[in-house]
Length: 109
Image (cartoon, rainbow, N blue to C red):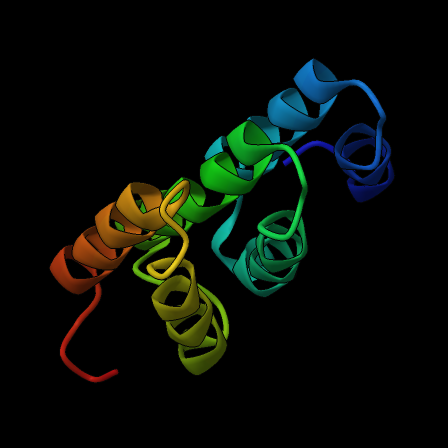
């Protein structure tokens, strides 16, 4: 992954495209040991008022599951995704992430 300070700067930006680039960079260039940190950042970003950013953060939990068979704090992430199913704007993204997680994570969770 790129360095965390650069990623923090991107995902904290007021520029939507910078935030999106930061999210994609931290997820797709991640190492397994970084998943807990990335997961926390995605949970924070899921509350963003911009629906594209919030939706992408939800989708990326599915990417983490596929790439690393890990999504960080499983119970917190699943709870978050279930809560987003009640939001008509984010419901589809949450359901897709839940589907990916069930597909790529072992039954141990």
